[in-house]
Amino acid sequence: MDLAAYSDHGLFAPNKIAKAFRTTSEEIARTVGLGKDAVQRKDRVRSDKTQRRLREMVEIVNKVEPRFGSALMAYAWFRSEPLSGFSGRTAMQLVREGRAEEVLDFIDAVDAGVYA
Image (cartoon, rainbow, N blue to C red):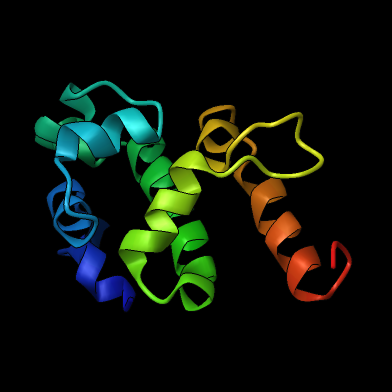
């Protein structure tokens, strides 16, 4: 999905992300390891940490969306599929731990056939 669909005035918008994934902004906050006030208060939505976590999730979901055929299915993968080589952790858990770059590298490796 186009990044503009997830943004509002140059920032990632939790409500637009939630709409795309057919969930609530509070669930989006929990998914990326933030409290619900991080997506409800304007100053918190604009914070570096909130924007970084939302960006990381959107980058990962966008990267795997072609594989699953929809953003909704890619989001389900992000939340629930254990990744090999990460002790059964999901992409969601790794993002919460600040390891989004490792998830992106893993996806690139899979795409290159390393884990085929």
